[in-house]
Length: 163
Image (cartoon, rainbow, N blue to C red; front, side, top):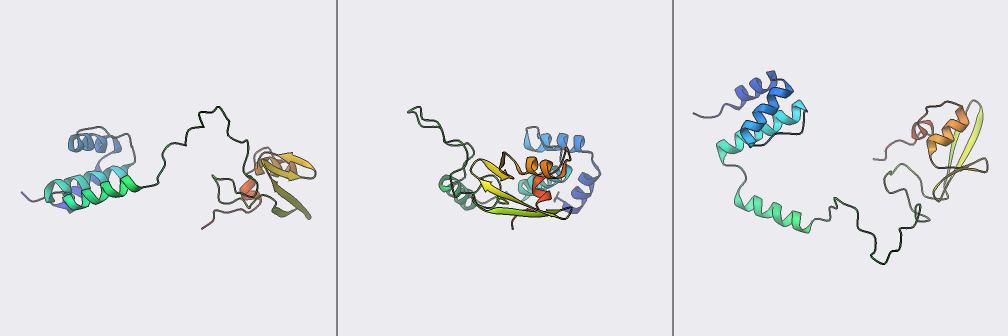
């Protein structure tokens, strides 16, 4: 009997995430760690279709293996040198904070007008400088300016995610 994708999809959409995980386990032979309903539906439908139509071709599998072998994707950070030297603390001068593209380079000045006063924050190595005082985060600077206990520094200084 041929697989009716539309009917299977409608059936899967009516299932709860727990029921979808059971269905996933039936089809894949292992349990899913995800509880995301949309993800589970997509995976189950894909596997049903692959079982019905034969899955990926041998050529596609070989190409995927080649791409994975030459990929520069790093899942773990590089180990420290064996010589016992420790990594340099803080960012390298002139560089950006690696984890966040919203920060300008070291030496740049971030400005914000708040309650009629202009505030200037300089990006320095290892943090930020505001009114001759060093801060480790933009949120700490924003707290010093506003007096609020919880304030997001990126939001306060309008540093949105870069495209």
